[in-house]
Length: 391
Image (cartoon, rainbow, N blue to C red):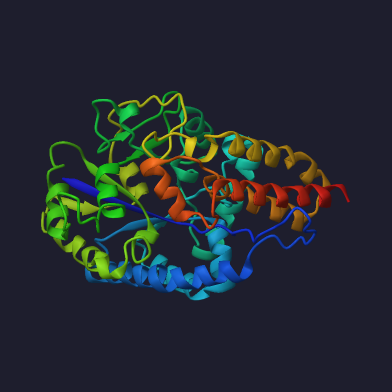
């Protein structure tokens, strides 16, 4: 059998407004642009995609199951600008066929800089998920699928039963991502690895007319799932939710593909859909995967270079986290909330100076004309945070 485990990442940052070195206004975030983007993506993706997932669950009488990892900062923006998205997420949560995962509230790189702040953000996120969807997550997914042995060990002690990571070739070697694994020295937590080839077929290659497998149909994809039978137990499809309608426009046929995919996969009586917790409860680990260095989903390197690969990014992150202690001592809740929004990984992603294929992806997501503009804008805001801290 092959158990398909779908998890969808939902995230939007609080984007900064253009902030000059002479600016003294403490309103750092572009409310107009953030509201406009949120409402646009809600109409193109979040609402139609969730209606589609809800319809799939109902048509298959609960046999179709999925998971979401939703950042705290995007949940805040739903509440501000698109509350109807919260409503439909609550509706799909009520089916009992959806699992919500935990992550850092601000979609941050906190684990790399401050274990205390990491734990705080995870607790804040956990409280938000409980408040909105009445679930207490058992499975953790770190920002950008950043992962190593230390993270697994730390998260295990926080009480989680499972953790997600990229099924990178350089850590798997000859092994397949289609099994459950365990990290070294953390026997109580299980590791679910993304099948990045099949995930990326949907997320990145679906509308690529130059791809040799174009067009990708639900029947063809289900055939690839069927080939897993005997060569693994599951297929972890970890995908950005914005794939549906935003990165892959409705005109590409992505919604029709997703509508028919459960039908095609379930035609094989040996296949099913599981949430991450169900996978953890159903399968023993096939062995240990040792990940001493940090990995992520991003770019060809699958490392941290998308966020911390140049001097600008490293400096910005270092200066940001230097303020953590003094800010918490000051006890100004509004100032701390602004600082936490700056920890969102997107701000560092915009500073990336990569070229060739990976650089095109970075330019697509960035609201700035160049990585240098992003760095200057961010540091101007951070300078004002420091001014407020001193006052």
